[in-house]
Length: 522
Picture (cartoon, rainbow, N blue to C red):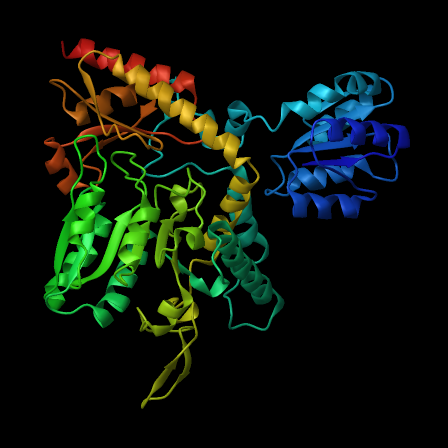
């Protein structure tokens, strides 16, 4: 999709003809207001602007486009009738990606339309201020995204603006600041709903993170439904946050855990999973993408097989949401949880998605303000979902920051991003495979963003310490997956985890750092 703001009728017809020839849809805007409205509605891959148009107010309109985090990644090209240095510089200052003379634009029109929304990692890196710094005198190579992702300036600005311009408590105020804060908070809920393709915004519950989301389900749905002799199915690659809450529930109720085994490559044995499902199985809780291996689990199949027995399924999406397009209705999962800080958003905020009928039937998780509709000493009536599960003052600015992070991610073409990340993972896998004495752990066919490994004769903590002196940040240890480490037969691994802003040069730096580690311990 292309959005064009062009006054010249001849050029309008040329663009339309060239687009039609290449099977590209093009929409023409006739005013600044229409342009911005169309940009928000259509999310075009490319915007073409006639910079000489006074009616279209090109400079202010471009600035408005780039100021919107959800639109800032749209590729913009402008043309001028002749070389006008001041106008060209002003357009570039306003954020125009490319400016050319009218004649050059006409000559290159076919190539421009065919080029598509290329993924420019170096341009994306400029959005993340922390990546500009040096560590121990070396450029920062941040490969610890599985633990937390870095934050783009758009998220930082949204949170600062929230504190500076609309800071107030929500829902219970009638003054203007409270109304602004409430709208921003609830707008963020709507953003998450659309991001997950949930059916209703009330299916989105704000929590502190993935861990709290899982605990909420275990302590509300679980306590209400799980009894002695019942079984809860997990996988062998689960994070502790998807093991311990269910163990606590089992200790309280007399239920027991059943575990889906995995192959040496780190793939679930689906035939063994099917054997675990029976009339005693009352819940399944499985990670979508393993934080320690990078394995992408076939969660749609997992949900389908469980639903044949009427068993609800929770998916841990903490590692998935930054790499994969998630559609909870297509997955048909009953619950889905993720953390904002793994999605380029702030810490201390996360999301529990639950099907509305299930949330309605669940008791509250905590008691306090805002989760009630009325209170007397004799009886309390609870609020409707999602507020029933959001006791007390929530992390208002955190929710706003999460909404901004999703807007930022939506401003990037996700298909191109996925292609880039897949290529980077393949490059990293091949590069690490060539390092002497290094063995990769987790070699599933379907993977996302994780390069976990061990080095003969060197403890992962030593690897991490030496790499840090080279400016390289990785994670070492059991990654909150002790049972998985036992299955793999290792006490710990080193883990480089990738994000959309990482580069091949950073993989090369990691390999050079590992060569230094090997030399030091040889």
